[in-house]
View 1 (cartoon, one colour):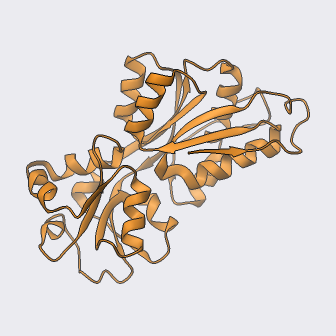
View 2 (cartoon, helix red, strand yellow):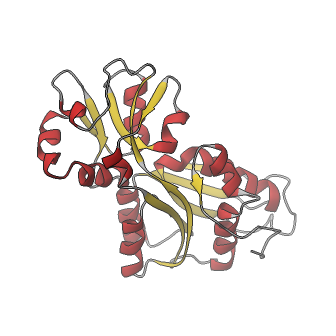
Length: 252
């Protein structure tokens, strides 16, 4: 589903520009939606947002060969799209790591990965074929992955769907990115060392298929700028990486 942020009263010099299409990993939906709206206000440029699992989005990008930016949740995804020459510029946004999301108060007393293998614990994870969080979860479990796979209550295509299942009580626990937990009411974070070892950089990539690469790069710079997008990411619990300030359209 594509979310469209319509043109408003932004910079009149850009108000007639074509919309920018952004493919974004689902775990960053909340900050990216806010950033896209802020960019529209500052520039008058309309932004269309397509959310999904990182793996699923890569498939869409490869097939459709259209769009302007790809916001990926992990470094492996960036390496893949680079090797396929689907992107040009790549700028890191933030560092994130997997955690276990549980209901507030941790009623099942989950502390370790082995606790997720207990018979009395219903677990949701991301699909490793579709979502970066699923790949990270599989890597963290290592030799225990087949056991987890057999005991899973459900496997979801996006990290936000995993968190939602925990939030509504469909499962007792789910493995999600650390910054996703605060997006849902009534959830608590359980940090596990083996999961934190699977930390990843989220990055924004300019797509090679973009028909307006200068405008796409400008939006990418806006996303990572400490006075713009990076501030929004930080407010939502992301460990942001260094970027250059954005002082106006066409400037870093």
